[in-house]
Image 1 (cartoon, helix red, strand yellow):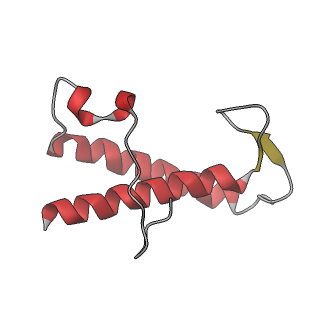
Image 2: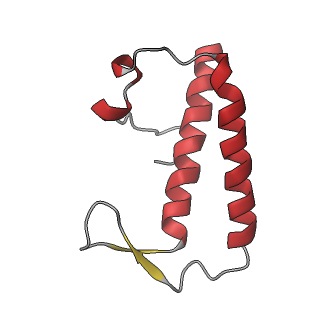
Length: 92
């Protein structure tokens, strides 16, 4: 999921596709996005005090997969990174 030169396209799930929402996203969503980014930074700061490799947690998709505590954080960060890269391309 990490953005980069060999970034693969990932299909958007139907439930998250903006085409299926009645109102398009506009600049009014920016303050909410920034608030969530600030919240993420605060959580990452707190996570720096914890061993993220030692403890494992279950995955939301299935109970068969156990992830290190830091792995879901990476997914969220890379996901946001992709959105920021996508927005930058849209502005161009």
